[in-house]
Image (cartoon, rainbow, N blue to C red; front, side):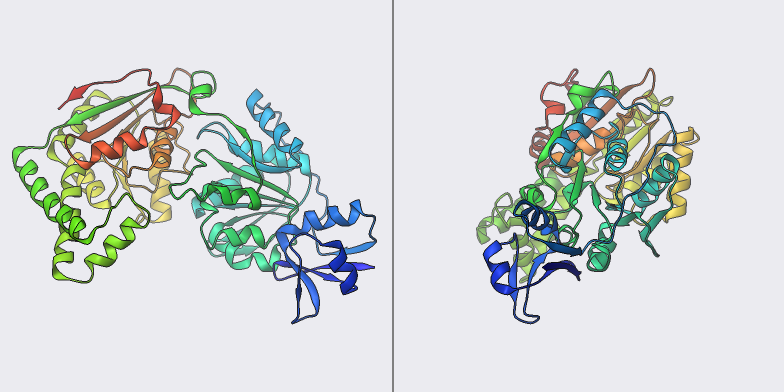
Length: 465
C-alpha cells in the first residue's frame, strides 16, 4: 500500500517504485537521494484525486489538519455578489481567484469560504497592518483562537494569519497544517520568492483575493497553478452607487512656471540624450534595469540619472500643483481628504506647508494607527501619504482623494481610487488627478487611466491651472 508523507514542503510517496511510475502521479519525480518519488506539496490534491479515482489503496500521513466548527457569531447577510462569488468558488472545486473592488467586502467573502470549507485555514497577507486587521475580523466573527505568524509572532493555531514574508520562510514547516489557504492581495504572489509559499503548501482549497489582478510584468498567469483560475469578478463601475459610493474622477492639468519649465527641459534633454546614446528604451523590456546599470558606469551616466530625478521631481511637485492643492483643501475643508504623492520628500513638504499629518514607510506602527484613528474620527480632516496607503488600509470616512503624483501603474491608481469608495450613507466620492502639462506625467496619466473605472468617467474637469 502506498503512503504519503509531508516533507519540508513536498509530498513523499512511499511504495513500490514501478507501481508509482505506472501511476504517473501529478508533479512526482523520483528522488535518488531518498529513493522515493517526491512532488511539490501543491500537487497533494491532484495526487489524492488520482489515487482515489483509480482505487489505489493508500495511507495519507501528509496532512495534519482536521475539521473545524466555524460558525458566524453575527447574523450579517452577504450582498448578492458576495454570495455569487462564494458559490462560483465552490463550484470551481474550492479553488480560484475572486476579484472585487476595494471596499466591496473581500474579507467577508473569505470568511464565508472558511465557513463553507470548515478546515484549518491560513490567511496570507502582504503587511503587518493587514495581519492585525485580519486577526481582529476573524476573532470577532468566529469563536476560535487565531494564530499570528509575522511581526515578531510565531503562534500557529488551526486558523492563523501570516505575512507573505513569514509564510515564505516557514511554509515548509507548517504547510501541511491547513486545508484552506487564502492569499489576500494575491497580485503580490507571483514574486520569485512568494510564489514558493503556494508550492510548499498542500492545502487542497485555495482562495485568492484582489482588487487589481493584472501586474505590470504580466506574471498574473502564474496564479493559475498556484491558486486557480479567476472564478468571479466585479468592477468598480458595476458596484458603484449601490454597494460602493458613487464617484467622480477629475483630471486637472497644471502649467509649470517659466523657471520650472526651463529647468525641466534642460534636465530632460540631458537624460534623454543619454538614453539615445545608449540605445535604451525605458518602456521596453528591462529598460529601467539597463538604464540604472548604464548610469553607474560613467560620470555622464551619473549626470543623466541626476537629470532624470530632477525633471521628475519638478513635474511631480511643481508650485502650480501646490497652489491647486491649497485651493482643494479650502474647497473641501469639511470633507475627509487623502493626498497621495509618489515620494516622501513631497509628503513632508506638503505636511509642513499645510500642517497636515503625514504617513510614510518611516512612520512607526503606533503613530500610524493613531493618525488613522484620528482621521477616521474626524479629528484630522486631511492626511498626506506616499505609497504606503495604496492598499490594505480601511479609511471608510475618506471621500476625497488628490493624486499629485504616482507611477503609470493602473493598479496603483485603482487602489488609490478604492480608498475613498467604502460606502457610507450620503457619501459621494471625488478623485482629483493633478497632471503637469507637457511632461512625462501626461503619458503616465493616460496609462493609469486605462482601467474600466476611468473609461467612461461620469464627470471630467478640463481645467488648466
